[in-house]
Length: 312
Image 1: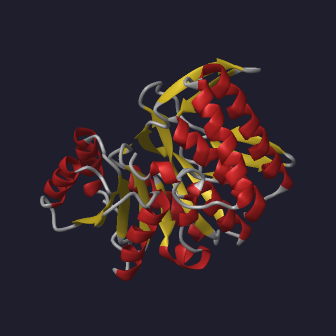
Image 2: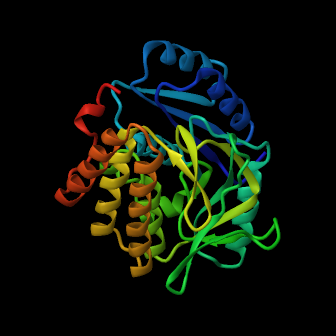
């Protein structure tokens, strides 16, 4: 369990979840936090029925049912707003398919407490994700000079400073949320976490990852292994997600404060994604159209849900 002075609320946004897997997520997190808020973004009725049954098992589980898919950012903001209203000290963000280790939250709280004791202005702390399909442990990313590096701590118990954290497995202090602000719901999905983290670091907050706090996670519908200077594992989403990735990256480059190094890194990443997905990402023509449309909409400032996504 977490320290007695912490009141933590887990916020999980769902959209047609795998019910059996989601039950594992709830079972794994319920004993580690004080409240669990599930925000469902217009799932089909069988999923909603299953979610209602899950929350009935505990008075500390809460279900909010949105009529349609409002996006991951809007769903997270809905849950965060409740957590703030209830006086929670922290919000833990989780994806519907991310299963935390039994001590994940306590490891994050312990690391945060150590950092705060050193008078470090902590914006958020995050877990190390382990891909269930490949057993690959993600590393944390940090700019050093003009170069971007993937880093791991020298010792498992050491915190590793990072420039951004993926949302799932990220623990955010209420004080930081109130100062930095909520998630940008205009992004709908993709780079919601990245954009928030850049805003946090721009305000002087620091972000840290933990090698001891583990989270079983799957990024993308599948993983493509491709050789480009080295072997790389590239998550493959459906073509519509490619639209959001390209659109939101362009929006972020236009409007989000970040260093020149990071602007170049995100531009390079888009080029690499474009090449990877055209080589190995069937259906290629559909992906090409979505990527190009995302670029155009990013320049034009289009936000929110893509119109054809309303029924997906």
